[in-house]
Every structure is written in structure tokens, then in C-alpha cells.
Image (cartoon, rainbow, N blue to C red):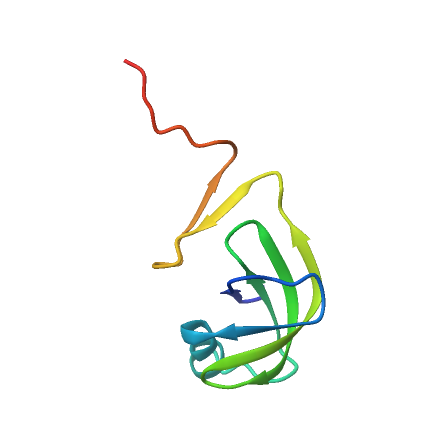
Length: 97
């Protein structure tokens, strides 16, 4: 299973950067290097399979191998905790008595 990292946006093709704490975790904690493959998500239903080109403590440069959009289920990631939540339709916080 590939490790998953959160990014702000995923372009349709080309390269992307993993930055900040996610980059530190990838390069220093997970010790990922050039040639390793991981998954990235933007927390809005988009994900990509990427290959690491360069790995540093502040940024990890990746090449996008494939991208997909999950339209069936809305995936939400709490960026403060990394917790994953799934929901399948519009959210309605109102309750009826």
C-alpha cells in the first residue's frame, strides 16, 4: 500500500510539490527518496499516483503518473488532524423533532 500525502492542489499532468510538514514527514520520517512512489490527495476528492523526483526537508518534487477524481463519495480530510471522513450527499445539520 502506498503512503498518502496531502497537497493543496493536483494539476492534471506534469509535476507537483509536497511542501511543509507533509514534505518533512515524507523525506525525514518515512525516508522516501527519488524513485519512490506515493499517493497524494487534495482532500476534495482528487488523488494522484506520483513518483518522487527529489526529496528535501521543505519540499518533495513529484511527477504525476496518474490522476483520478472520486465523484461518487465526497472525501474530506481534516487538515489539522489528517482524519478522513466520508459522506455521500449534501450535508444537512438540521434535525427534525
